[in-house]
Image 1 (cartoon, rainbow, N blue to C red):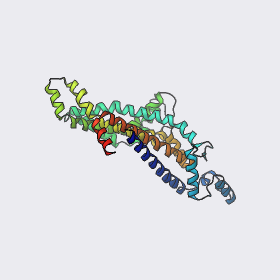
Image 2 (cartoon, helix red, strand yellow):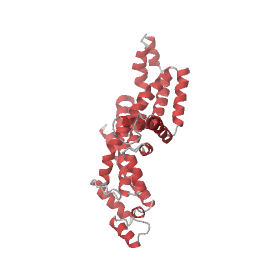
Image 3 (cartoon, rainbow, N blue to C red):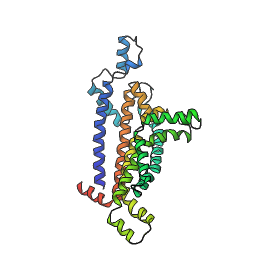
Image 4 (tube, one colour):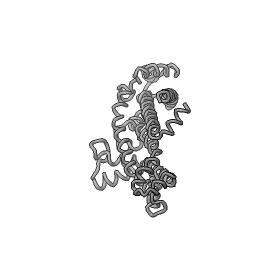
Length: 310
């Protein structure tokens, strides 16, 4: 297990290193921050002075080497827009994104998991068709449109929920619902297909032949084996949402790293863009490693196969 974990961590380091190179190049191809920071009538001397101030007049390899050297020690540079350490800005916004992501995943599980299980147990019935229709409609609904619609209904027309910002538990409701739609559909469909795949298994038929109650069979034999894939998709979803739900945070003016990324990109704030990307990718990788370990813990066969392959 320890050897497997070390390998995964080494792979993660390589992935993050390659990601820093890609983001570094793309950020500089977007243009210079001097174009945004200076007025249109700025003189070439002013432009040159600002470019030299932030070290942007050096070659890209030199800038990248400096970035890596400082990043290893925890210094990701100073934001050109906010004039503050980039890492501090990201870490200040990260808790808001984490709270919203956890709320959305919890809501998706509370609704999507029972929906998928019930649809599978009543396959071919009206309940199954209704659940499939609801998930299909939810999947076809654009996230930004749903968010705006919820704001108009509950914020503008009914005045029962906050329109934007983070100001208490009630402010989580609309953005969490909006953000939970996509993972809810995935969880419901995966739970349905997994339960349908487990129901014909011999151990399920044997449990029923023993005269066990249907609820006992479902809870002890069906769900225990069918919901393992749900663990994976839930972990992946959580990692994605922790990385910043850009559209939802922008619509609801949520003070998370997704909105910070939008502000940084519009200002061509290289340090913040690079830091947001690196921190988001690190969170995603860590969550996925953690999910893999849980999956191996729940299923001994997968653990043996994984360790044997390593």
